[in-house]
Image (cartoon, rainbow, N blue to C red; front, top):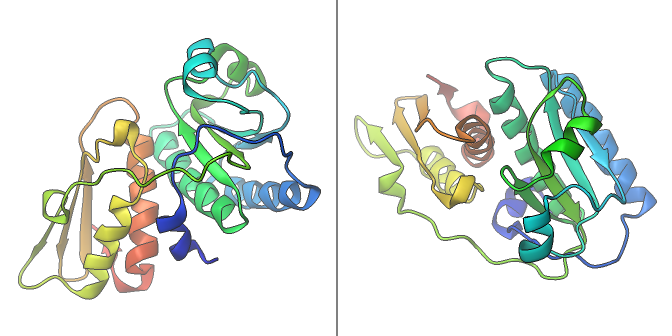
Length: 220
């Protein structure tokens, strides 16, 4: 499975089987994390066999079997949340390509425990990874014309494909509070400010680039 195909196959999964990550899966995930950390100046880490990643509410009422996850960590900086969002999108789609499921958590992770795993780092969330007990279901999406506009004529195929990909991206509470405006070969991405808006912007940016093809446009 390629990353593009994974966009439509990946859904939020909150219930996981008891099957542990294989040695090969751990190796692949760790190598991906190392690559992203190096490329984007991050401190993401994979935590295994740890059931304390979620807070009590999430563990009791929202999930089951969660024991492996990525801690999304970086040194504090104005763009750290967006960079972590961008990298997390890559991790989620990559995990899907090797047969794993994921869940991005920004509000219900165990903040005290996670801070001990990433001391001194900025951590907006975690991404659960593992063998899902279910496949998940597609989230509801807004119409493309509610989140995008192309100025100066008909939208080219790359822009339309990018918007469709962006609508597949997971966002906080599935609000999809972004706007993509294209003109010629430039695209402006804006996102309503609020909790997790930086991470959401990074996730949407990654999906748009994957759908549109980075060779076809540049960010305004």
